[in-house]
Image (cartoon, rainbow, N blue to C red; front, side):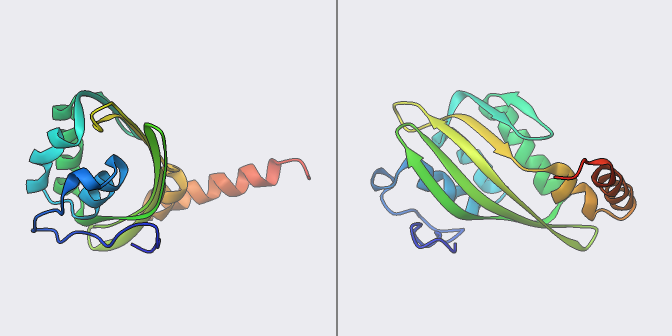
Length: 163
């Protein structure tokens, strides 16, 4: 982690220091920074049973559906890992800034985004909403689709009125 407000990440395979002393947002940040396929079984300790999850590709409800999204991530990407760069908390909600690094067919990619979280009275996630630009952060970086996306972006910029 790069933000001094966040504690150092936990060891991926180790135990966690007294979770009661961590805020729900920091617990979740640490979980994602050490995420492994085996750790997906622990989603029920962080998410409410009817938690909602939404990102540019998915909109689901429930821990089993959220687990499937992350299991798919591990099945389709190489060496996926999250780095939480910012954590802002207020009341029962938080915003996490993050960088997601992974590879597709040996090509390293990076996606930057923000997650809006809402927590229940027990500190479990009830809403997990990821915001990131799929066109800029992913599509433009892919070999065939990237060229098309960059051409569309240039064309749209050329038609923008002067400011």
